Image (tube, rainbow, N blue to C red; front, side, top):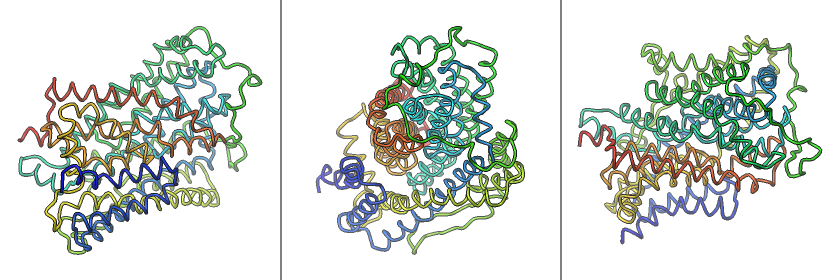
Length: 566
């Protein structure tokens, strides 16, 4: 079979997902089962995989899915617990008093608080929380959603305490084979993953520092009285200061601590610094900027829903300190479990292992309920019940709401993750063919050549656009990106890193995220207006990331443990 035909067949599941989700606008719960069965069919009849291996790969995917759902459940449960305890109301009230300037409010709430929430919860929650908060303090609903979407960029690679890396890249790469190659060359899988994490953090910091400025410029251009970019540029010093206040601790955390913390700690440190600076008027323009009177707003700016936090049953007012304490505890417990081996080891000791599933050598999976961020998040929820003096019925409501979200996400992942595992595990077959991602990679490398690093982030963004998720994009495409890098003889860690960055940027135009954010403020049906505005920041992000990758690989000669040991 010709390499081009083979590559097309290997790519056809991803292509079908794009056609069904984007072209035909099928919901993911209908599209992904079809894509899974196509993948299984190609594996069985073209690659000549054994039925046993396809089933083993499916079971491996289901175990990984349980880990992903555990994290999602914990993240959403903490958010809902704070909603019912009055914590989110207290956080909202605290933001409203910092500065009357709408540009400053946008930077603090959408950018810094949004980055922090992304680090803690991920899965589109920043837009779902930040957008209603902005509407609550007087922003047009359309502007609030736009700002909520723009924050779905820099922090996303380390969202939900590192899920896109810990689960996405980890599960998306053939860690068993790569780990064996690394071990033979005196390195390890953990070292390799940390190199990827460091690359992601550094490049995101370089590219993402200007996002707060882009936010305010788009705010003043599309929603200001004067419709000008100039009003946005007036806060350039403050916007860049807010960008750096997040990206510097973010980059250092990524390089030295790992994938769980960059967005969480970067957001927390940035919030503390920038909020204090705004209160003292540091770099804040003397002239306050505001929207026109709401009576003058076009009807398409207005949403039909508000986040009616005030109507929820709160038992007593919550102080700002107590409102923030659960998120601080999440950060502290994560740091303790990742930095101190004895604590991490004790948590890892509770593990369910599936080795050589159905007798297939190398197809294994495990589930660590305490060590995964989901365990820590659930533990903090239980602590929060006592910290905030909640009644049991409020916790029951929070669990109920979180479970409903889980059911929706779970059904899609039940097919998506096994599909990815079939792709990865297809290298063992009767037809003596390379695995499907490798077949795609070889053809792309031969066709595009050395310019590929420039395009690699766009591939990641396309994956996120299709799947609505950085994590899923990394699962689908990491092995493909790794294969292209191997074929080109360049740093695989760098190319996988820009895959993860591109997938983060793709969240700004992911239809799934736009719909979710729009739904929180009653703007369903106006997704097109938002996508037209978020398209250009996405283009900036992937092209700039690609340019950095080209310089890193071909000018600076960036390497990694796999390449260096060569």
